[in-house]
Figure (cartoon, rainbow, N blue to C red):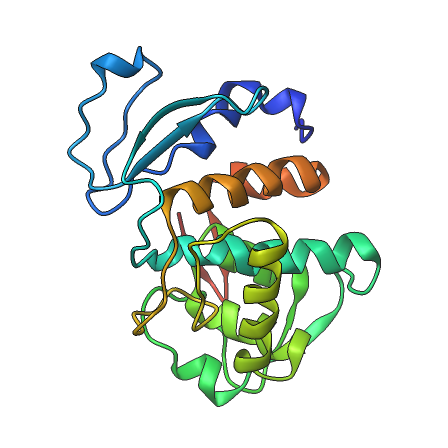
Length: 211
């Protein structure tokens, strides 16, 4: 399995393509031919930074589970700095266990390994896994969200404000398509050693297999 930035060439441009709301997917074609029904779009060349197409790209909008890209960025950042290891384990709180939406299906009182929690977030979009990691890394989801917003400013994401670690609907919780592209590109470039997580098609935890 290859994990490097160059090995991801077939997808590195597409990952910066943020077609939100309708979930529309468009191939690489001349910009004049793009007529997406999505309300927001941003397409860039990941090598040169050239903007190929944009539509309301800097307008903030509810990002739903694309929020988890920032949650994962902070996890990867701590792994790379040596402040965290894949074998570290964090306890599952009642808040994490009760969290609605997509789940990894952690059990309250269990201790989840970081590697598994990452898979729960990336592969399964588990809101519960996000809460476990946020509380484990920062003491509370609220403190983790403060870190998310600081990192967003550091990366130049000027149209993003986070209110939680999951993307759960909340007043003022927004990202722009442009900001999502910026964050996606940083994930690939800053952490090529962890890029393989995004290639996993399914993950089984507590006997439950999810794609």
